[in-house]
Length: 77
Image (tube, rainbow, N blue to C red; front, side, top):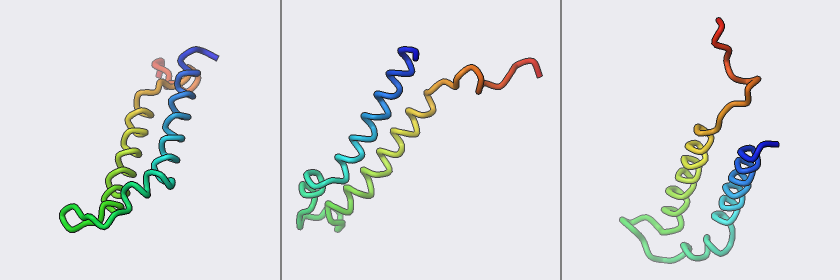
């Protein structure tokens, strides 16, 4: 395996574990308060901003990945 492939796997692992941490007890408890921001409870705001943000970051990361040589379209066509 190339060094780049190993780094990509490590990045995917980091994204996965950050996603798990985002939706588990410590972070949910931090935002589970009675305060509101623009009339929206903090927990709802956290979920509706944090979740799409994490999806967007993973999307941007996946766009930077290079395709393996066998998956690249051939230029001879």
